[in-house]
Length: 406
Image (tube, rainbow, N blue to C red):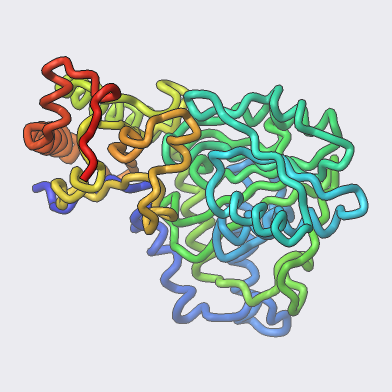
């Protein structure tokens, strides 16, 4: 039997895989040691568990276990990478290059640094499908550039950036390259060596692991990347991030990465098929629906559609038994239309009418069938109530209408 509500918001977070929880449980009770306690069995057991997790996480991204720095999540990783590089390399310069569609954890961090006079920032535009052009990156680099920060895959529209080309340009120019890969790790193949990534942020709760734990990959050689710690204390994590390690969470993170490594290829095929079925059924039945993001070069579980003449919020309200989102979870407290969609050139009305479907490991075909039916039903009903839709159907060009002032 299918259970309601249905969870189709896997970009905001993901349900924990039962196999992950099972691996974590002993570390809450009998194996409760502090990994920094080097003189007794409880500490050794914790340290060993951390070492194993580090290897599992590193293997998924083709890194060395020593290059994994644990943080509280991808937001902290982004902050640590950007502020840590800026502070460490301030002799070289303070210019940062990033893109307008980045996650708030990157955008707000660079804006804060700029407001404090600590950095100058170049925000690159993206094309209509939300992609950064590597040549724009090349042209933005100056002799004062210390960091390029471009996300792997966008959290709203799922478009995947040409990271390898950007990495190559960064290497050529001798500039460090940071990548926020939170939405991509565990869903699409990520290889920090092949992609030329020097620092990379990601987190456990987007890949069926626990919340509250993330990692920053920091390259150890060619080049050896150094970052200034943003938190002082016992010098944990090679001096980059002090604080007692959250052993149970780290163990869960490791297990989640291991499962992704084993199942990603098959999972990706299944999710892509499911997502394409959802897309063609909805867009086939409803006119004036528009796909946002790249049609094929996108995350397997991502689908973002604008429904003309329908308010996104009313659409969500009409589908209370399906968890979806309009815009990104981290900005849904604001009533502004999605800045990501606006950057693609989507008009305000359409941006307000967009819905993100995030499919994940535990979604079933039955849930997709239910969603298709429900979306078509609710959009049709809302449009029947919309005078604008009626006018547009009658051939009125809404852009030319003179609305009476009240």
